[in-house]
Length: 481
View 1: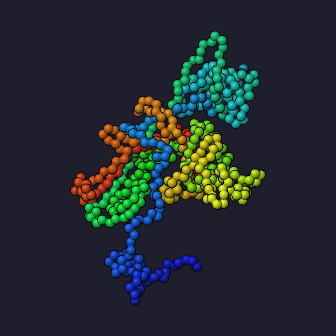
View 2: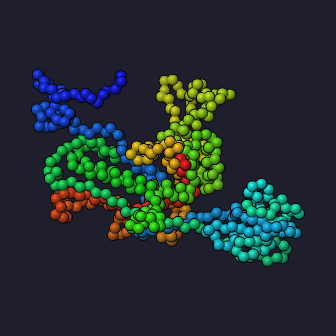
View 3: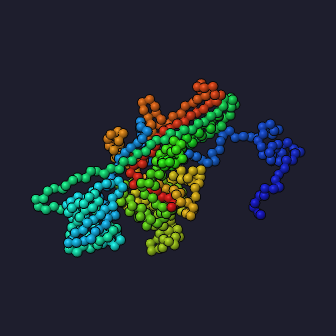
């Protein structure tokens, strides 16, 4: 087949009449081994070639969060509940003399009906959309109340599948005040830190053979390293795991194999947002209508003004293409690609033919401000970037995460007071005697260590931490399925 090099026949070892280092006269497996006992020694580069660029994937939590100490093995905090009251599963009883008995299905977290005599309510049928307004005149047990309609002939009819919310109250002249009171509703959440460890080891004999390699490291340092080159990479890998564990961690389920073995896990960012946040489960939002749906959901949550989108490459392209499509010529069809045929003019100024064409967008405003940032973790082929992105087989593959910017106020039950906290932050174990944010120490009998009779140097790494995702209802996860 043209253009394809066949495996067989391959080249053979043939002596050369001249003393020239040819690919066919190296002594070694297949003639390719760099054997320093050969007659011809190869030239070697002392500088390591960085063919993968910066290989680390951490920085996400450093950009959007903070690290705070904790001296407990459990972190607890309270988040505000809704201010107003609404029930979505209500049955309307038979209507007689303008009155009806309402039966409420309460949420699992609530044991008593939070509606009182004298309050005025609106009742709407979830299917037909018709509604009526009424006043509560009596309570029956913990899940029922009797209401009197303001309409002579209520539009609402008897049956299940109704929504009720309170909009006010009304009392007669000289009547007693409101009976009972409502306590503020808080949701209590908790998380527990996990212990992460790693180790690098080199035996004392190998340490006596110094081999220098010039490197430029991911943290910006450059210079020469020898046996500690691998130690440096172990350190970088451990630092990545300190972040990715906070993103990916899941709690062990009761009677699971991990819990049975004594490993209880933790609640990572993805797990928490999947559980308590918002999820876009249709791949990538690619149209303005898609983003209108997202904005509509955010309106029903905390409505944070500024948000950051951490996306993989494809979602970044889809957002760029959507925004570019809005830049078409007047009267032209965007669907026909007019913004390309008519010349790109993104941003404040038209792109000149002599300038580099910028086809990307750093953000946009649609009800809220959205700032876009590529997330290397979702692009790295050795991490989530190597997972399937085919819709049919990619159920659960994550393409991006929307994180609200700024901080929120919560009641810290350990501190016993309200505190301002970033929506995402890491808590690590620390006391006056022990700091477990990032520990490293050397053991063995080589490399300056004198702690045991082990003829090696071992570099130990340890951290104990968990991530707190406050106000998960303000986050959005973009995934398949």
